[in-house]
Structure formats: C-alpha cells, structure tokens
Image (cartoon, rainbow, N blue to C red; front, side, top):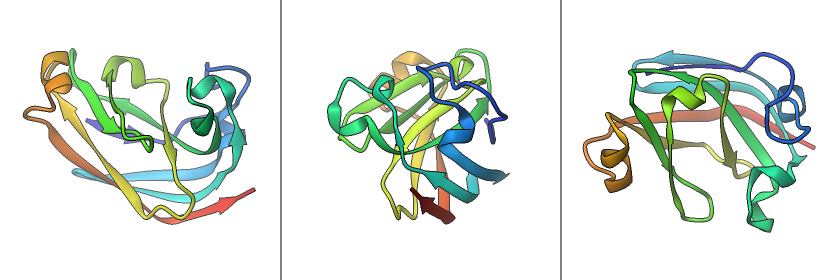
Length: 134
C-alpha cells in the first residue's frame, strides 16, 4: 500500500477543496507515513452524519494498493470504519484532533477481514511535523 498527498481542487465531498484542508507533504518508508506542513480548521457538513465530526482538521491521503484491499481505522468518535482502497485513490479523508501526534490504520486483503479486524497490516501516520492553523 502506498500513500501520497492530494493535488488541488475539489475533494468530491461537498464544496470543500484540498487547498482548504491545508498544505502538506507526505513521505513513506515502509509502514511509516510522515506528514509535514499545515492542516487548517474547516467546517465540512458533508464529512459526517455526526455534528461533532463536521468541523475540525482533516487529513487526506491518496492510497493505492492491491485489488480488493480495504483500509480500516477507528474514528475519533470511536466507530470502526473500513473503506475499499480502490475508493481511496482520489482521497481517504481522516478527521484528526488538533495537536495529534499521529494515528494508525490497518490494510486488509478483503472486506470480510476488515470488518472482523483480522489479519491487517499496520501503518503509522506521524503528524509531529504538522501545525494546526485556523
């Protein structure tokens, strides 16, 4: 699985653009993904059904990997969310808490493993080089 930073333009979810979310670079060394730059606080009603998840800081990673693979992560609200990696090629958006040092996620061979949280490959995202703007 490979991760990179998004380009410019619309996120495809509401009217929010990648530029509104921030300006950052993404590098990867195996299962460690390092993000450096700035994330900006955004009001994004389309991001979630939960009111508490609609305003904050969001990181978008472009993901690519094996056909049929899924990426899974616990949300800040405590829910488990799994998405097909094929749908993350144009952006996997993750809500992050201001000041967060990072987070982890897992990549699974298929949907069944992702839903069961079974046999996933762990990835760590380092946000220590990120500043949080307004």
